Image: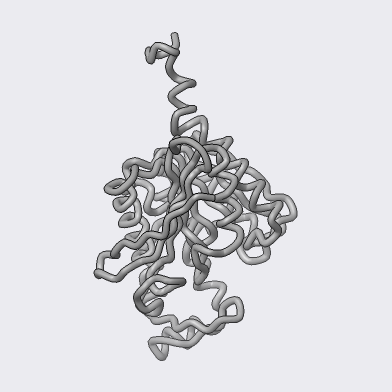
Length: 269
């Protein structure tokens, strides 16, 4: 894949690390912005495989590390769901200013909830994809178990997530209480694709059903069959990327224009 390493600043002036992957040949038909999962980074294999599949279909993809994660500056303990949403909006503005505004927003897990929340504030977005996303970001707090009580009483706590220790503060939990995800999804006003595995043990398949029920058409659901939450099997992530690119072609990029106009550029009758 052809790619560029990029950097842009968040609202607090901290430098966030990003990567832009291009199609191997030709000019990109459109651009996508990818949001990674909770405490993950832009470099997890699933994102790389999905990006590769999108690149094959002429879609350029920018992925970045949220504040305090991966190669980005900042303290993760000072971030929350709202700051993730702001990072996404800033990333979209960076793409718009320096390349082309993203038409596709893709988010994995907690990142999926973030792109749903950010979509209406990213005016260029036409198609939104959630992968293994919770219907409500408060799902993260529920998964912390007894740690939430410690955080609430002490103001912060060290939490082990996927074998790594992260500090979470009470402000992270408080921020989640102000999110009305159902209303956000109802007012999305964009094409929506929901990808989820019925065997997901981290974010249950019922979350996909809740997102689908709340959303208005056009909306689609694709089962990821036997995939795990992180899509660790290459075949699963490549399949997800192929599905996303085929679905998005109806709504964005050059292929969408070809469907709606004739060879002379006038609408088809």
